[in-house]
Length: 273
Image 1 (cartoon, rainbow, N blue to C red):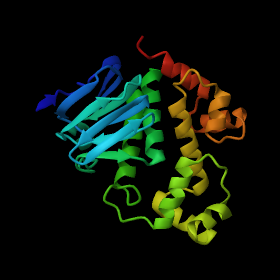
Image 2: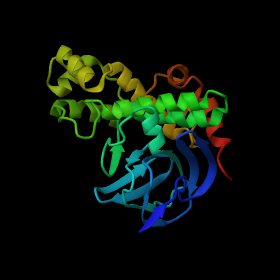
Image 3: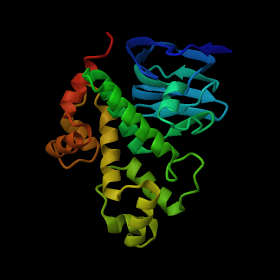
């Protein structure tokens, strides 16, 4: 079985950034299939656009725009293209990085499909930092990566955490799959619990409020749609459940510190022809 060298990913590279303890790679996928292989270091695969199927001993992940996978080191897996133009962002983390910040490197075995929208949002911010080109890049990316591993290892998000109540899974699925502007009493009715109990349990499991979680989900959906040049900002604001384009821009900027249009230009200006 092939062992991929540090920084080796399969595609046409837009940009590769070498930092202390990390290798960040922005690539266009060009292969119909990449056979079984493994990497020396743990790394994240984040799909900016398109789709790919990844198989490992733990099963198959059908990934689309916005999907985020964490692969532990020496984890065998393979990839199959989906015929869609696909762009992936990879963050490879060396043992030296884990040691320097005293961050545990045994978060999970094999491949983990990360669905927590807060972690996905942090990965979008890391991608944005790679395109800004200022002198605080290393500090900013280190800080964001520490936030990611803190969330991955916290009781509410660790892969081996205790099971969430069934009603809480119903709530989160509804928030992820609909663009409805939910009210607290409607969510409580859907869950079959008292609104106060819903708020307390939601914060205990996700360490955030229901309102902030919903905003995070909406912005994460918007980020996945921004690479599609056929969609206007108005289209995206409607598809993601914002009241109007101005509301979308205001909330987006509060999360990303730049406007949706600025982010789209940042993304498309760094894409290989």
